[in-house]
Length: 267
Image (cartoon, rainbow, N blue to C red):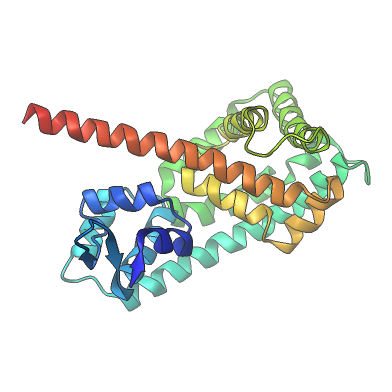
């Protein structure tokens, strides 16, 4: 059996999130002790895994609940489906890693690179590959919106966007060298810019933001290249982004709980 704290640490989700999943019936504990503590068994652990997989591909919580509670739900078939989706996502990320590598080397002054090269992953040819893969994962609406956003920019606007992206990581390195903690207000303000910058291309979910932070400090290519900017940057980014997403998640859950309470009061 797992306590809420143990499950939170094991799965990488906040305790508040687990409480909310319980309240909406998405993930109920196997037992509730006399002291009110929740305890989760291995079945709950597997269900949470499915919840996180479905969140990764963008499904709403109530839709996930409907799927998992369906009498036709097949865990093995679901895992095979998740594997296909993740494999497609890995392929897309591998294509983008090369561009990230070149960008970081450019920022570090190791190679000269044109501004066009900074966004080579979004060239016409690569954009078509990206479109095919992401359509399968997220659906045509999100992909079409992303393409429409980028194509709507003038060359001057694109140059500004690329310059803003470069400056964000430069400012992160400056924060490290100034001794600012990754959870400080100054660094969190930089991450607000980072979050807004991504909206030039698509609307990132909290799961995507958290996944990026983890990837910066776990993927060998990201670690190697971010360390060319500063040896502590990978871990610094993950800590900073985790705090940023936790704060956003907490605010969102509190908003949902307040809405539920208001709705119950009306009833």
